[in-house]
Image (cartoon, rainbow, N blue to C red; front, top):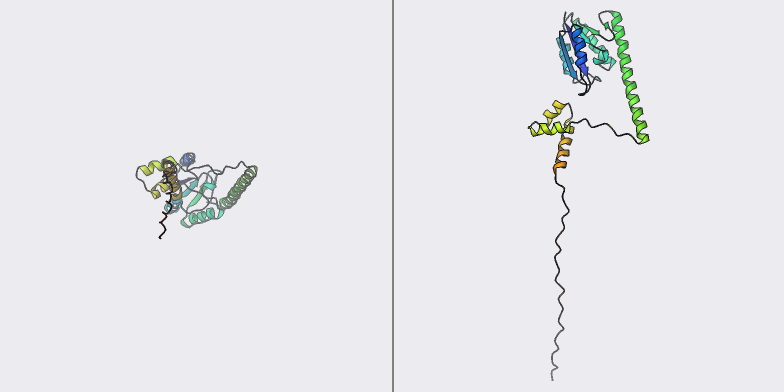
Amino acid sequence: MARIGYARVSTSDQDPTLQIERLKAAGCTIVRSERQSGRSLSGRDELETVLQFLREGDELVVVRLDRLGRSTRDVLNIVHDLDRVGASLRVLDPELSTEGDLGRIVVTVLGMVAEMEHRFILERQRAGIEAAKQRGVYKGRPRTAPNEEIRRRRAAGEGVTEIARALKISRMTVYRAMEAERGADAPAEEPTREAAVPRAPPRKRSAPSKRPASR
């Protein structure tokens, strides 16, 4: 039987080291980690790799159930996939396993609780933002795009897609940083004034000469 650990954090400023250490202490011979949102299973390549690797008798280990997914449906689908290959899920906090019927019931309940808790957090965030807007103190989301790192990578010859993938940001964010750099480097243009060309004074028309009267 192999114990395979899976660790997940959502953002680049979070560190999965504590999760990895706990998984290794629990006897996991293999630990895979990634930085991805838990709202869905799409884009979670490390989790997909683990699920394909598991065989009969193996155990997938996570520190908390929400590291596996934020959606109850996703968690139950993963448990179902593990059942199909004869593997099981083990959660360290709180300690439980899906090897028995009671463990599966607890996993279902905890998945629902985690999903509800996530919704409550989002609702509190929205309420706080709305209150801050009404007080006129809401400044919006702080900038997270590492513009200096984007410029350094562009100077080194990296492409837009390569930079976006490496920094886990959108290509549009890279383009905005490039536009901001061009705008900052461009010298301010002074308004040009046309040189005043002196106009020639109007020519005076000479009075017509009088012809002598014919006799």
